[in-house]
Structures are given as C-alpha cells and as structure tokens.
Length: 393
Image (tube, helix red, strand yellow):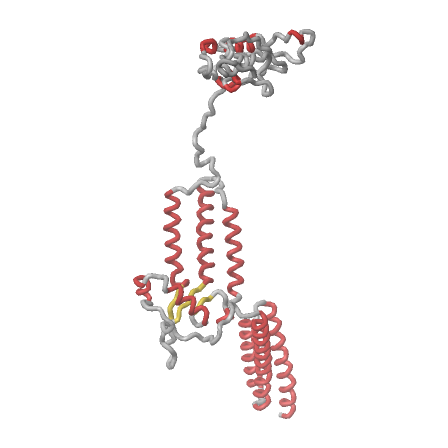
C-alpha cells in the first residue's frame, strides 16, 4: 500500500471502501445482496425477471430500488436480452403492485407488504363454527334429572338389599362364645345387580310401548341381565360348601376376620356405633373356626378329596335307605304272616319310597321308574309269601 513520505500516512483510495456495484438479475438465494434482507425475492412463473438498477454513489443504497422492484412485477413478461430467442415454457403470471410501494423510504419495510401479496391479503380468515351440541357428542353427560334419578334409584336398591349384604349374628347356644360374628354376602350383590338391570329393562320396554321409539343400549342391558342370571345359577351351586363358599365373607375364617378388623378401623366411630362396634380389636369378634389361614374356596386337591368323600357317603346313605326299605317290610310280613299285614306294609313302604325318591331325585321319570321297580319287588315278595300260608291253612 503506498504511503505519504511527509505525513507518514497511508494513501487510501476511496474506491477501496466504496460499495460494490449492484448486481443485475434476480433476487435469488445465490446472488442476494444486502438489500435482500429488506425485500423478499419475487418469483413469477418459471422464468426470472431482470432488474436494471442505476449506479448509486459509493457507500449508499440505490434510491430507485423500490421502483426496480415494481419493474420486476410489471415487466415480468419481458425476457432477458440474451434469452430473447428462447420461448418460455410456461405462461408467466403477473401480479399487481401497490402504489404505496413507490413512497417507501430506503432502508425500511414497506407498510403495504400485505397488499403486494394478494393471495395473503385476500385469503379469508378461518372461521370457528358453533360449539357441538349434545346430540353431536356420542358420549354426552347425562341429564341432571336422569342423574338425580339414578342416585335415588341406587339408594332404593341399597335399602332393599341392605340386610342381605351385611349381617351381624351371635351364637346363642349354651357354652358358646356370645361375641358377634360379621358376614358379608357377595351373592346378594349379584341379586342386586339383577334387580337393577331388570328395572332398567322394564323402563326401556315402557318407552317402546308409549313413546313408540327404540331406546339405545337395550341390547347391552339384556346381555348383562342374561349373564347375571347365569352367574346366579353358578352361585347357587356353592351354597352347600359351608366355609369353602367363595361368596361368603365371614369372621369365622381367620383371614376374613383380619380383613374385617382392618377395614372397620377406617370407618368413623360414629357410624359404627349403630352396630355396636365402637372399638374393633382382636377380641371384638368370636374366635374363628380356622386355626391356620386357608385360601378362598380351599385348594384344588383338598376340594377334590373332600368332594369325593362327600359323594361316597351320599351313595352309602342311599344304599342303606334302599336296604331298609326292602328288609323292613320283609321282616314284618314273615313274622306276622297275614293278608292284611302284607297289604298294609306293602302300601306304606311304596308311598315312603316314592316320597324319598321325589325328594332326592330331580327328573320325574327317574322317580316314577324307581318307585315302580320297588313296588314290583314288594308285590312279588307278598305273592310268594301269602300262597304257602293259604295252603297250610
């Protein structure tokens, strides 16, 4: 760099610090200048328009930049000089310009930028529709009146099954502990469910009758009611299992008594006072029958062995009863060998046999065949016994 020998300062040419001449062409991402941060590039169709900008003073911005931008839009259909022989592949699209852009100061954003973009300015604002009604919502909240009715119906159900669900009893036999036992009947809960579903089904049928419309959801209610009746049939088969009944929670079991004590302590004392259970300790209830904790319903092996034992004693009892029904009339007619004794003994024995078989057997034809077979045996015995007696007389 040259220096001034007298002052010792470097000689600076103003061209070194002058702004570079503006490029001619389009405002694309590759050849954008400082002014590109103030104005967005304009793209029209498939071709790019050229901007002829006059040279400005070094270090200043071109004063006709806004006008040049306007010329981009107005002269967008004119091809570049070096491309005049080429035909455009697509038809250029012209965009209207705003008159306010010509009065924009240099270095500021145009206030009418939105007006220069008709697609943005003319696009309608999104409108919000009305809120959905309760009919459009598939799972709308229940009506306050219906909700209050459900609450009252629930209270009525609880009042109807209150005594069946929970019971407090004492063993009044002499020599037994008089402390209370608590019992919760889970089978009553299923009966409560059946009653609830039954009432709702009747309500739906009344709507069909008088409103002549098909209510929604009655199929699900009917299916739930059928399942509840099937469950009730299974629950009834467990009624003879005593302490192994899984639908009875009672303090006679060791684990159940512990559960009652833990849960009753969470209930306020004022509410327990009506049942006489102000203080709940290990000595509140009568001692449980079980000495060791047992699973609900017993284990499978234990339950199977117990069931086999019960069935054996049942068959043994039937055989003993059948033997008594045959042996007793035989002894009576042999020891007191008269016509009237044989007839009375046979008639009474057949009636008693019919009553016993009707009590224990379920199928009517089984009862009839058993009674007829027993009567036939007695008739044969009476006939063979009376004939020799008459000959001897």
